[in-house]
Amino acid sequence: MNYRHAFHAGNHADVLKHATLARVLVHMLEKPKPFLFLDTHAGIARYDLEADEAKRTGEADDGIRKLWALDPAPAPFKSYLSLVKRINRDGLRWYPGSPGIARLLMRPEDRIELCELHPQDVQTLKRATAGDRRVTVRREDGYHALKALLPPPERRGVVLVDPPFEAKDEAEQLLKGMRQALKRFATGTYLIWYPIKDRPPVDALHEGLRSTGVKRQLVAELWMSPPLSPMILNGSGLVIINPPFKLETWLREALSALTGIFNAHDHKVAWLVPE
Image (tube, rainbow, N blue to C red; front, side, top):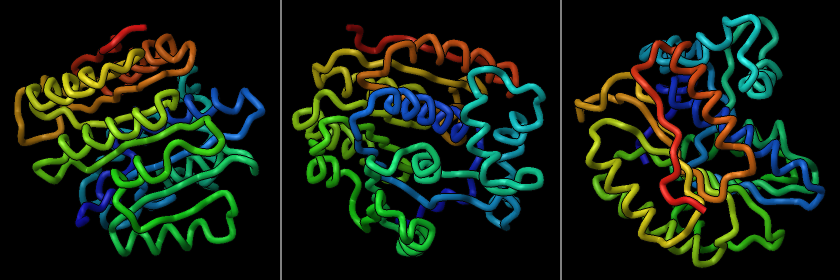
């Protein structure tokens, strides 16, 4: 509950996560039937990259700022960058969190459920989304929401599970929540983000998700450096369950581009569990 994403907003992990989220939401909009977006660890709707927290770490300098500076932008990121530009008038100051991305893309008939435990961030999120009838902000454990809010009445949904991984049992909580969610809503699209510090915890998380028995689990990872030190963020990854059609192709193009833009060590797109 003490984690504050303001220190990390717009870093390389955010670019991977939010560009992928935007691509998935755009795919959902191709069908007329409404859908739910559930964010289990929402943070706030937008972050000030000129604030003390962001300046203290400077992580956006090696993330969104590098992508923003490119003209033209690589094709996979044009839609994502257009969202960032919509909340900035002159230059790059503001960065949209996942609630901000969802609000920029989703239609009046769609629904947004945002869960956050940090008391200050909950209030910031409520102020930012006040008057938006699509949005419900809950000061609630996001893992509990995976059981309480699924399946959605719309029968279509995107679920982002993006914990800070500060608790020692975070992976266990995540896997327990995902097992409950998949039993209740097996057809949903899930984006599960994780940090890459050391390799064994990542392999254990993958094995836990594989053990759910659910097929169509796609992995995307961007390694800024070899995953050798458990003390630093060497990279990040996503497991996408029930990915949209053609997302694999988009991810391969997007991660190949990011590897060059960020001067990253390597990347991977592969099926954890195939069709």
